[in-house]
Amino acid sequence: MEIARTVSSVPVTAKRRILAPTMGALHRGHGELIRIARQAAGPEGEVAVSIFVNPLQFAPGGDYAKYPRPEADDEEFCRKAGVDILFRPGVEEMYASDFSMAVDETSLSHTLEGKSRPGHFRGVCTVVAKLFHLLSPTAAVFGEKDFQQLAIIRRMVRDLNFPVRIVVGATVREPDGLALSSRNSYLDPAERQAALVLSRALAAARGRWDAGERDGDRLRAAMQDVLAAEPLAHPDYVSVADPESLVELGAIPPGGAALASLAVRIGRGTRLIDNLLLEP
Image 1 (spheres, rainbow, N blue to C red):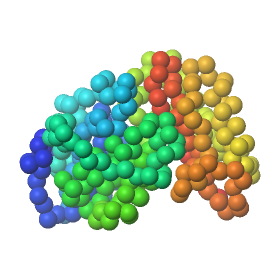
Image 2 (spheres, one colour; image 1 turned 90 degrees about the horizontal axis):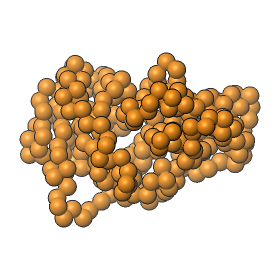
Image 3 (cartoon, one colour; image 1 turned 180 degrees about the vertical axis):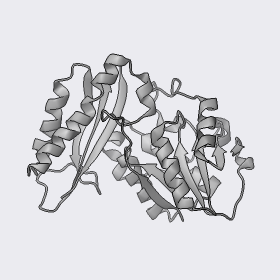
Image 4 (cartoon, helix red, strand yellow; image 1 turned 90 degrees about the vertical axis):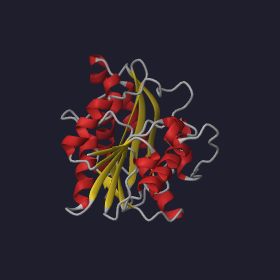
């Protein structure tokens, strides 16, 4: 595995290169993205993983400083997963001291996570655009757990004509239903148990959907009722939105789909997100 720590050391290639962008603290969910990347690359292609904790997507007072950075473990993870190129630059490599440019999506980014975390997706789009430019991937793999991010990156690729195919990795969960996240490491045992309320809330929406419910307010209420029964859960938002526009839904037409999603602070403040696509 080749490790590039500077922009100038990123290897140029004529091979099919598939990128899995990450912020490190790698887990089985990332492993699945790497597996998908390897499959997409084929025997003649190569897999690149980027690890960069991007300061632009953290709000002031957020958890940027304490975000886990297990460098040696991440490198070993990538080696075992068969990664060809690991790009792990420092902040000074990615952003000049007088950096003043950004990529700003102006429609999908103003709801859900974008409403709760102003400027977050400007940071995401900016760093992903830079990674596409620096690594020149044929395709890039993003996880469905960050559904809004996935939708925005797709929009950026379309609107800015990036020659990059977006490949989707399904959400990977623990056996008890908790979606894998690097932030799960912040949870103590009681909070870890309480965090299962996110998947239970989504399951409640799924149950109502499967029973024929097509009213967005009632589906949101079903999730809110589950969250209200968990003392350690403090919801940020509970949403049932159009999967394309991310606009909140009222009456869902026959044959229509909906994205159920939520963000919840657990216990001392660890913020977790999850979602479930409800389809006919």
